[in-house]
Picture 1: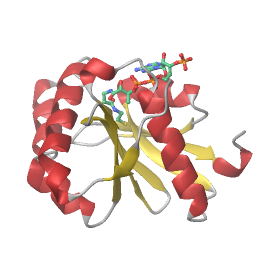
Picture 2 (picture 1 turned 45 degrees about the vertical axis):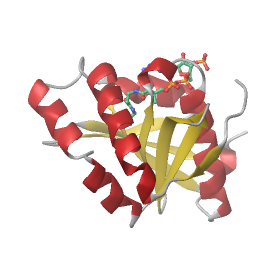
Picture 3 (picture 1 turned 120 degrees about the horizontal axis):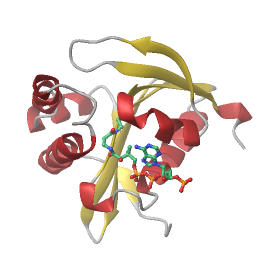
Picture 4 (picture 1 turned 90 degrees about the vertical axis):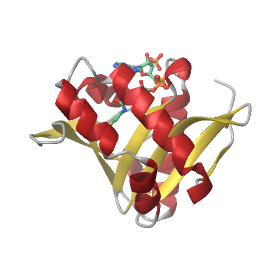
Length: 154
Ligand SMILES: CC(C)(COP(=O)(O)OP(=O)(O)OC[C@H]1O[C@@H](n2cnc3c(N)ncnc32)[C@H](O)[C@@H]1OP(=O)(O)O)[C@@H](O)C(=O)NCCC(=O)NCCS
């Protein structure tokens, strides 16, 4: 794919990030979770919650034509909140954002990156070199705990 600009998000981006996450969840995760879980994930992705998380995570956004095409976050040795705009799925943006985050994590001395994958995203992350460590049953949407050794990534 053509490289897209990626930058750190600011609180001015919170509403647009929240919209993107909620649309991506309602489109991409409905097959794997009950409607009330989907509602809970969306409530947990309100603009206020997105803003609050910016205080504790590095939040990045990728842009196409001045619009947010995807987002991903880093806190410590864990990748959080990878979401790609519905109309941009399948264009390599998810992989590109993960590549960016891995480079950022390596720069911060992270050797093994962890993430909690939505059930339907497991194969996506496996394609990118992640392996499953455990199933994580959770009231707000069960996930797969996955890891990748960054120093082994080629
Ligand atoms: C999962 C998600 C981030 C993938 O982003 P994307 O930009 O569509 O993915 P890409 O185009 O970069 O795909 C990279 C590779 O993974 C594959 N892939 C993408 N989504 C996949 C899926 N759900 N299952 C299996 N493989 C998938 C692509 O075919 C591609 O393979 P290739 O490189 O061999 O051609 C996106 O679909 C999304 O936002 N989903 C809803 C929210 C979600 O589940 N986020 C993850 C939370 S942990």
